Amino acid sequence: MEGLKLLLVFGLMMVLLGRQAPLGPVMLGSSLLLAALYHTGPVAFLGMAWQATKSPVTLEMEVILALIMLFEHLLGQQGYLEKMLLGLRGLIRNQRLVMAMLPAFIGLMPSVGGALFSAPLVGQAAARTSMAAEEKSFINYYYRHIWEYFLPLYPGVLLASRLSGLPLPRLIAALAPYGLLVILLGIPALRRVKIEPEGEEREGLPASHHALAGELFLSILPVLVVVALVLVFQVEVGLAVGLVLLVLLVRHRYTPLKFWHLCREAIAVKTLLLVWGVMLFKQVLVDTRAVDGLPSLLAMLPVPEFVIFGLISFLVGMLTGLTVAYVGIAFPIVMTAVGGQISLPLAVFIFIAGFTGNMLTPMHLCLALTVDFFKADLRKVLRMMVGPEAALLAVAMAAYLVW
Image (cartoon, rainbow, N blue to C red; front, side, top):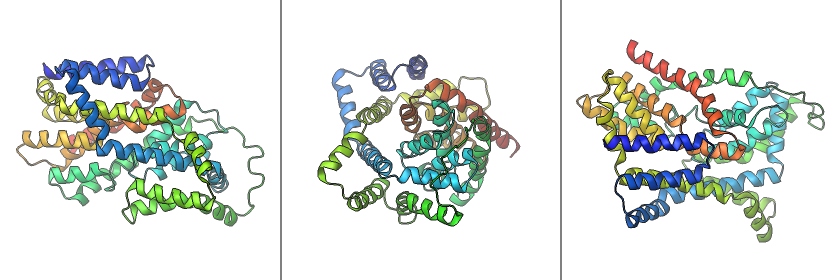
């Protein structure tokens, strides 16, 4: 059956990644194999590659990521990141809480590059710990996404409301407890982190909490401005980062030559190519209509209907790594199957099932970027994710059955 081809490609992809094959080549090879299985010729495949390359979504993501790289590198060069962490450590004694707060704060910005933004902060916060690269990756990736379960700034929540016909306030109220549950489920991983003595690290810091708060505010001000532009003034993430970056370049008197050196040091071409590889796979997935065969394949399973709906959402989430994709594909399928009217409990279960798949796949750019930044073992990071994500899905299933 057609659905089996897609599952075969995805299974092979996971095997290769499990053997620590580089993600970029795996994505390209998987795109070629998927196209071949669905009888796509070389010319048609090149057309898909060109479509993925010139797609406004791809170009926007590449620009945003490049700007974030420049922004983060400049903040590091000028000492903002160091002062930010020293201020947080001075005001908050719990170092584990500091590490979780950093990606959570950046997660308020609905940006594909948010994980890359917060990764250097988590890395610096963990500098005096014995944490493995996989633990840093887990904290950065996991706590980056606590808001996406219910915050209407993220398009997945808005799309789910519009497709299901459920009022947005009701849907947000039903999804919000899962954001809190995600935080609680991540606590065991934080507790396992071993913190080394800080030694002389606090030397040279202002003595009073008032002075520490002032230092922290000034160091975090550029990031606060970006978040405020996005949340309050509804400015696009790329434009917000670009404007603040421009102000910082002027303030710190970057000459054209100095800016060129900043670009050479900050922009990782490998990461930009990785993003392109993911977008190519998604383009092939759409153009071959490979996902269309999943519902009929899953319908053959001897399980309740709501489980089938959850599986569709979960698999689409895994295959695309995009909230908008599983909402846009799974919700119409489910609504057609149930006669056009979906209940709030079922809508919540489908949303959580898809998000669980979304969080457990290298197709999710935040995971790919985080693992690449920390040079972590993807398999180990995914193993750490399975526990809390499985618990979250189990709660969603139990809530549906009881509700």
